[in-house]
Length: 378
Image (cartoon, rainbow, N blue to C red; front, side, top):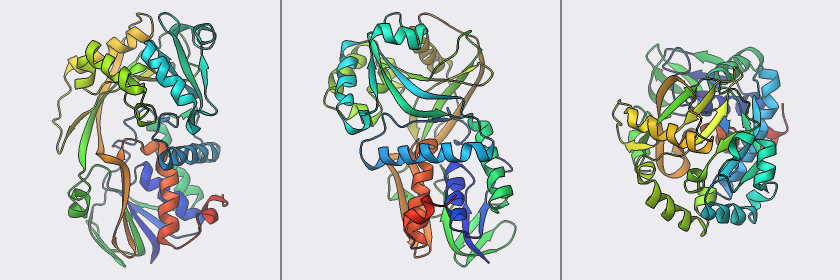
């Protein structure tokens, strides 16, 4: 019998397995796919701290960033670049940056006037009034990092995997699967955006739907990013910025000047891969079941914003894709359908940024262990 069965091998499931392994628990991960295929690899690999909702969510992002840095070396995961630059092109954006720097999450961040921005990232200098600099972020290549993390857990931490296996019912100590029963003392269900298979009534109670996003990979632009890049639209969208009173004026101006961006939930994040190509996005469309179509006009909005921020550059698009994730009017929830079962869903698109901290909390609660016991073990 296993100590813990985890349903779902995305970043949240893997994070729970890491926390469990640090307690020496015999753990199995069950997943319906043969390999990582969902939101955990269809993203920026951008572990975002600055801009996360103030308080607990921001602290989770800080802790998760630390865990990424702890495991990157042992798991063979490359950290491609660090930090974030949020370019401000409107006076209203400067006001948001100034207000943010006065908050706790802004304490180690700094304002870059145009001269300093030109030194740090010259491609952004034209038309920028300055930028927010954050030292906190790290960037990994998701499509490589997630399989490497899974391999690390299997080969070095003793976690077992049951791939191509669907979980039909969870009633510990019995987990019914498409390949026969598995016995475990406790179960953690990390369903991602599968809202209907396990505990659908519990998920529905949180008002969960799906968010569809567009993303693109651009050819090497001929320069290197010194950090991830975000823009004014992000200051109006990310809760850590957008909840500030100063953000109201920025939102009003963006709505007047770029209504199509607001209508399609577009803001700009740009990160770079080891081969020099750029991952760029994204957009946000919400529904219980989003349609599978990816209108070219949405991609053009993203590319237009990229071109504005990067002084008219328009690199070749070499790949396009969509992704979906669970979304609700909260950042996450950890529900308890039974005493020894936890249902854990991140509902704000921050799996890479917050999963490790959330997993430590859930495992500590489920196994009645002080969270410090997990964090001090390697």
